[in-house]
Image (cartoon, rainbow, N blue to C red):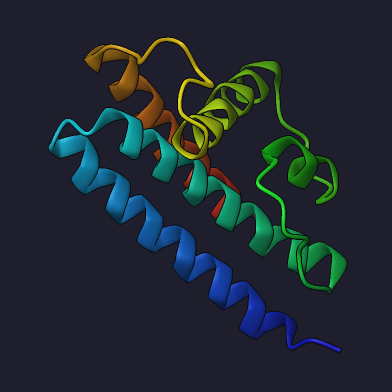
Length: 126
């Protein structure tokens, strides 16, 4: 049996830290790394929700869609589209050349802002 509140706190704190790291990377125009940490932030906040809903440790996965599906979270089409886009950037950082084009600064800003929005939206579900 796990301590659910302790695990939720662990994943929530991790998500907050990853968002802070993404902020520093964004400010320093480290696009690929910024987007990787955006993904990591959302992965961790979703794992916090997974723990809350399922009362067990989350699996060792980076798949945001799977975490959504297994945490009883309903998202609209735009949110899902973003989740599937940001999902790509976890692969790019781990497996070079997995993604062909780095987004420009405006698109990166949009993804970064969307990450902050989704983080707050997911956090409200805890």
